[in-house]
Length: 374
Image (cartoon, rainbow, N blue to C red; front, side):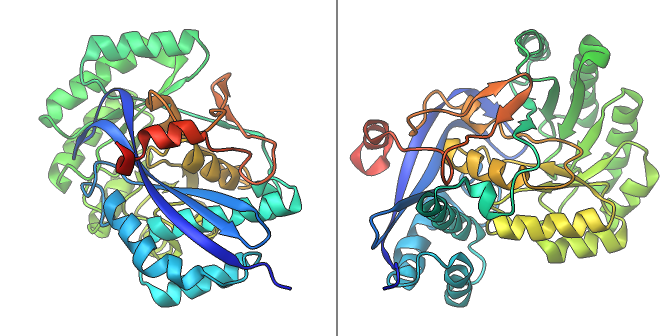
């Protein structure tokens, strides 16, 4: 008798952050997670997560929209389907709904988590096996205050928690942003990598000016300096400078990856399971980049522990991951909804070794932070 999906629940969870987190398009005071619980007829439950940045300021999906899409369209399409056939279930969802990558990613994670528990193996094993059990993780310095950012970086270096730091820029004048970043790089010197994320805030002319100054300051990587639609402009910038240019918002799936590779529009791809529609979509995108000689980087949507560890299982299976990851989302949150939060030490995130994701929900915390019970 086939094991079928019996229920799917999507729960909005609002968690406070440890500090205000400034980006080019928003300032975050809290993070909203969509926690998915998928149950099957054999009694096994899988969990997943969908998370965006700043509501709708990052892209087309919001937490509220993700829940609505799951409740109204995606969950009904899954009820009664074979819970052990992840590809079959996802193919059905792709017929029911176009796009909605974040929602689909959470559901795919839940299906994989349940299947891993069913078979008694880690999720990475279902993907072919991990080639590393830990992932280098950077930290974003996002207070906007130069002295505070330097102090924070020095402390995290001393604690051996992070040795790569990213600065979110694009809110201020180009020269002011560059001065802020350059001062931090001078203070840290060769002890740490320093990268910047512009989040599409510059036009091409500002990008050329800003990148020239950042390159002279010794910055290691420039992320998405101009609008994602301006692929030809991104190619011009990538050809003009030695400092690597990374595509993030510009690459959502393998089709984008193919076009960016053809144009020579990026030196590095930021991979995210949410924007790829799930782990398998991310792996397809990574394969295109790898084949084209484009370096890979494990990105984040500032997920909580469930989404972060799902991404970690996927990233741990990649043959090449030259730029490490930014899977620091749980560290930005004051609290979480899992019993045991991810382990970070020696500049890396450790992969859990339990079945599925290797995580369990904390029912008391979930009840406390869920929006419909606030």
